[in-house]
Amino acid sequence: MNKKFTVKSFQNAKNKGDKISMLTAYDYTTAQLLDTAGVNSILVGDSLGMTMLGYETTLEVTMDDMIHHTKAVSRGVENALIIGDMPFLSYHISIEDTIRNAGRFIKEAGAHAVKLEGGFEMVDKIKALVAAKIPVVGHLGLTPQSVNMLGGFKVQGKSEAQAQHIIDEARALEEAGVFAIVLECVPSALAKIITEKIGVPTIGIGAGKDCDGQVLVIQDVLGMYQGLQPKFVKRYKETGQDIIEATKAYINEINEGSFPAEEHTFGIKDEILEKLY
Ligand code: KIV
Image 1 (cartoon, rainbow, N blue to C red):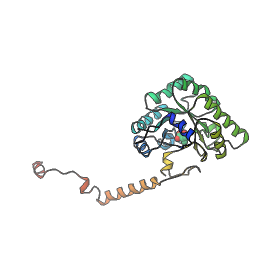
Image 2: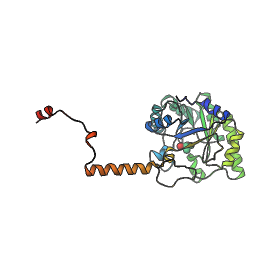
Image 3: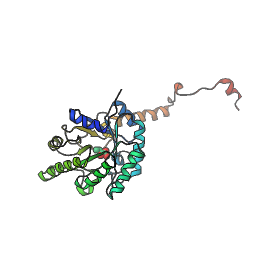
Image 4: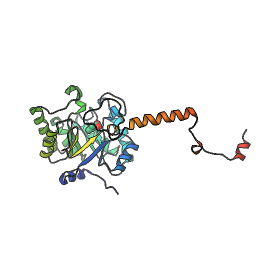
C-alpha cells in the first residue's frame, strides 16, 4: 500500500537523499493513473492553458480554470501531494487577493499546497500565505508567466550576475517559508549549487539531475504533443501516435461494419420482439 506524500515528506526526502517525483495532471483519469503508479506529487500546472485549453502561453489561464481542473485531479488522488499552480495575476495585486485565491485551491479544490512564480518580489506574499497555513512552492529560473519580460522562453542564469541573482532569490524564498522550489531551465551546474546551498528541496525541469526532484508535463512524458519540444523533455511513450492509430482503426471498423461486433451489443427476448409493432 502506498503512503500519503506530504509537505513533511518533501523535506524528509531531501534529508535522506531520496529523489522526489512530480508530474503535472489536469484531469481525474490521468491523476488516478499517476497516483496508482506512485508519483510523489501532482502539479496542476497553469501549463493546462497550453495542454488542455490550446492557448499559446499560460497568461490567459484564470483562477476558475485552475479550480475546475484541480477539483478533477483531487477526486482521482489518494496519496500524491497535490499542488495548485497560481495563475497570472492571481497573486500580483495584493496580499489579500493572494490569500483569497490560494485559499480557493485548498478549500474548494482539494489541493494541499500552491505554487507561485517569482523571487524577491514574492517574499511578502509567501510569508502571508505561510502565516495563513497554506504551504507554498516557489518557482525560479524560466518563469513562463514573465515571458513578455524575459523576451521568450530561454535558459536563465547563464551570466554570473543572473546566476548569483537566482541563488540569492532561492535563499530569500527559503527564508520566506516555501517548502520546495521549482527550478526551470537553468544550467545544471547552477541548479546543483542551489540544491546544495538551500535547505528545502529543489524540483528541476530542464535543470539537470542534481536537483532533489524532477517535474515534467504529462503530455510530454506520454508523447502526446506532436510539435517541437524543448531539449529537457523525455518522451517515455508515443501515446499521441497510439491515439491516432486507434482512432483510424475505429473509423475503419465503423465504415466496414465490423464494429460493434456481437460481444458489444445487447439482446432482447424473441417473444418481446414479436409483440412490437
Ligand atoms: O505549469 C506547469 O506545468 C509548471 C511546471 C512546468 C513546473 O509550472
